[in-house]
Length: 321
Image (cartoon, rainbow, N blue to C red):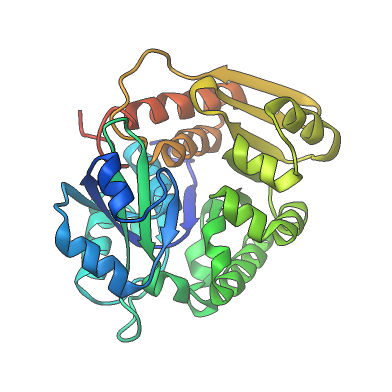
């Protein structure tokens, strides 16, 4: 790692991911919608967890996955998220610190338990998620400490946090500190339904407070009321001066900056085992590369390469090999 490299800070939901192989019939039995994340209460999550067999547990959450990916690439990364001091919370902290990511927030002593996400993986590699947000929604202004921002060059915030009023206040404080320290703010759109729910707030936040926006084409379509990639490119070239990074699944990714569109292809002909973390690891590859001074094109390529690696294994953690 270069001595000049700066720290990347992530802010997001701290969720323990539980990976569970299953088939389409089981998805229907659990009344889940395939490929979609469903938010549930603690009891509903616990009932299902007792009936299934997990193959892996890792510290998760979208930006947490990206931050771990950045660390695994040799980047200097830290994470801000809320857990409770319970078994899952302790497991989350141990797992993320094992990946050489510094965990910034003190666990809560009481209140709701640590968040968990049951990720059901069908033979086609699709993942269906059932999430109990738990203590993650209690991220607050008190968790944002100015000294944590020393030597930080990029602050990566996930859209999922918008579901919590206290987390939105934490974001506001973090962004103000970032501006004071001239830290680039990166925003992940996170989920199409979330974008629709908070569309106006997202548009204001992007316009006033962000430098880089990352999302898939479905999320960008939801944000700007569009229908396809061509419309996204036209809209962004005409109306945005941000670094807009758009992933397009099997097609690859493109970036719109001012009036330039830069495209790269996805890695072709690879076996798909589990799509969990594909977008998160793309973000890790792109952000780590861009933070190290690589061109946008090379950063996009590195993001696609990392996404291709992660979908050939279970879970959102790169295997050591």
